[in-house]
Length: 226
Image 1 (tube, rainbow, N blue to C red):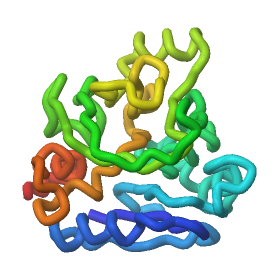
Image 2: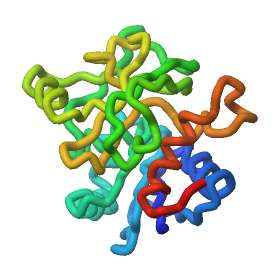
Image 3: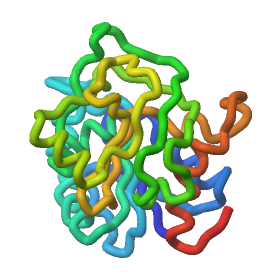
Image 4: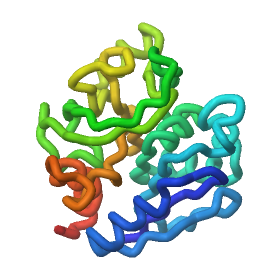
């Protein structure tokens, strides 16, 4: 299985994702710099968290115009599984690969804490090993993680089962408690919480299984059981 981790100036969770994939799940992922092209034989793409371009203008907007994103948009149309985490979610939204937008938290503060989210869609490549309404202890780390969309978009998200994760307690006033969504084809998923920071018992004394299952789900798609 060929897993590509996209790296932009300001990405800071790329190595965390690679560590979980390679050291915990025994895959062989590769980094791809934002000016490069991802090979056509890629199986999975992950856009990690961070502060691409220092969040200049607004998070994800400059990264969305990087050369690699045009190729990722084409790969998304080919149903390649793509996961955007935190800033990666913001990049997917700014690239029009996912609907809606991510606004400043209502507190106007950077929020870094453990929360609980619930699974509301188990049909994406990243949630097949999870159960509906399963609770996942997981950390967030963002200043602009409040999901917002207009009524038409929200109606479409609900109708097409595109809401993947919801906050158990809506700590930042995201619309409909949304913590993660997918596209209509369900191969592109964006989530604000950080599963890579909760996938090992050393850093997650609460319960590391649910977060790790997000990564294990994609391995399942390629008949690799871990």
